[in-house]
Image 1 (spheres, protein in one colour):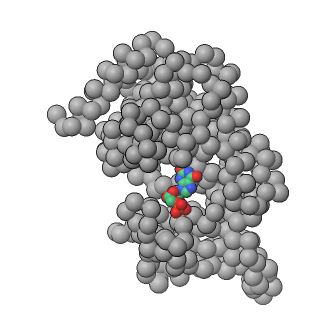
Image 2: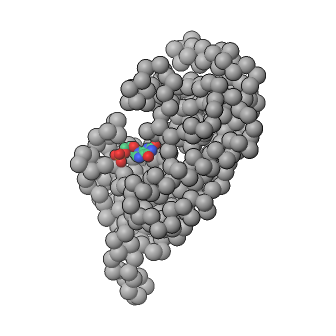
Image 3: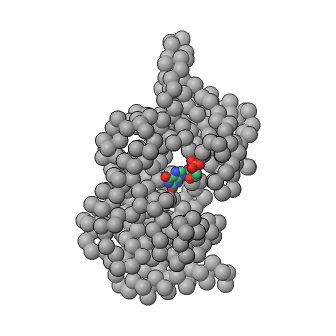
Amino acid sequence: MTNLENYLSMWEEKIRQTVGKERVLLATSGGVDSSVCAALLSKAIPGQLVCVFVDHGFMRQGEGDEIEAAFANKPIHFVRVNAEARFLAKLEGISDPELKRKAIGEEFISVFEEEAKKLGEIPFLAQGTIYPDIIESGGKDGTLVKSHHNVGGLPDVLDFKGIVEPLSGLYKEDVRTLGRMLGLPSSLVDRQPFPGPGLAIRIMGDVTKEKLNILRQTDAIVRQELDGLAERPGQYFTVLTNTYSVGVKDNVRTYDPVVAIRAVSTSDFMAGAYTPLPHDVLARMSARITGEVSGVSRVVYDITAKPPGTIEWE
Ligand code: XMP
């Protein structure tokens, strides 16, 4: 038996003893940690896990449906809340990055609380906290709420009898391996990091449905082109800047926003270098973005290291 098999059966037993026949609530983001946490709990206590997936409308192309599909055949009560309209209304006119993040965090908590109340009394809360989260939070006993990684921290007003954190002894790579052992698809397990506030912080300035639509298409092109590389960057995506430039399309003058491609080589996401992508790959992405997506005038490549630049632009 491998260490991970032991780890899994130890936690399955521990979860059964802790929660008995009661229900457990988990906020699912579609990220690696919360997905693996959900798969583990559904195996340990089939039928007792309630997953709430707050879809803020800032996910990548097709991602909300992919997340829902990954849990469709598991013994989980899965609730997807399509809250795009609420989030867009809350963000209307907000262009400052910090205010945007704050507004998204607040709205996330409101939506989550409302849904949790509809579901009736659920005594236990599960979280996909992993070992490095605990270290970063300065704790040691595995019971800390990983507010720095959640969209806005979890609601204090919801009172739980206990918190279950079955991944708290694992590093990311072990979490991915465990996810594969539990039958999760590669699209979830090998997913690159994605910020809680989603595409909203990759749109400079205020967020609108039209801008999200443009960003989703450009991001999908970059992923299609880079997903298959033998040496994939650690993280790659597009940013919709609020800088406009003049272009020409079908002999007509255009004045549309500039899209930036960001691809970083990093092992821990704390520091990193821009990835020196081959020029033919860059040229293909640029041609596809300007050719296939309307509303983009020009494509630039971000060659900033972290530090001094952060990986995200906001
Ligand atoms: P930065 O931009 O700070 O990002 O260099 C470092 C890593 O963290 C991700 N990131 C977030 N992840 N919630 C998250 O769960 C967030 O609010 C958030 N902001 C940034 C980022 O994508 C990168 O991998």
